[in-house]
Amino acid sequence: MIESYVLLGTLGVHSIEDIKRKKITVSITLFSAILCILLHLLFRNESIYSMLAGMLSGTVIVLLSKLSKGRISMGDGVVLMLTGLYLGFWENLCLMFLAFSLASIWGIYQLLVRHKSKDERMAFVPFLFVGYVLLVLGKGAGVICV
Figure 1 (cartoon, one colour):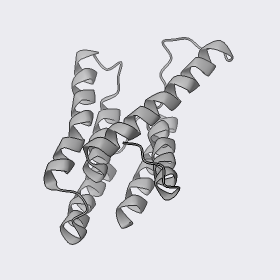
Figure 2 (cartoon, helix red, strand yellow; figure 1 turned 180 degrees about the vertical axis):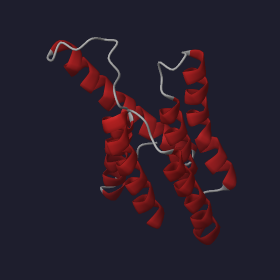
Figure 3 (cartoon, rainbow, N blue to C red; figure 1 turned 90 degrees about the horizontal axis):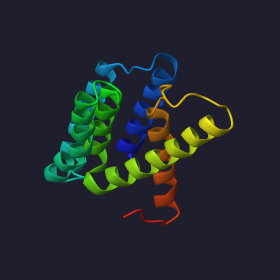
């Protein structure tokens, strides 16, 4: 439960940063990751293997950021590594699916209704935040993502 609040707070702060500056503060991410490890040692909600596997999706995004020469933000990959640390592999994949779906809907709206350019940068972390809220509410309502 504590982990959910910490992750929600971290994603909230990073969402504001991403919208305003299109960057995240790595020290906040690092602090949250250390806190996650400490909470894991106390409560043992996820296995270490699940935590490491959860970080894989973020690692893939970081690699894609390198390959795309920054068209995909490395910060998004780092945040996904953090969410994977908290959520584990399957829940993090579910979160990514929700966030990509929400970002796609928003992007289509921006292109068709607001006539934005397809090359315009879009903050992604807010979609992770909203996706995580939906994930938590879905769990509370008994809806299972995976």
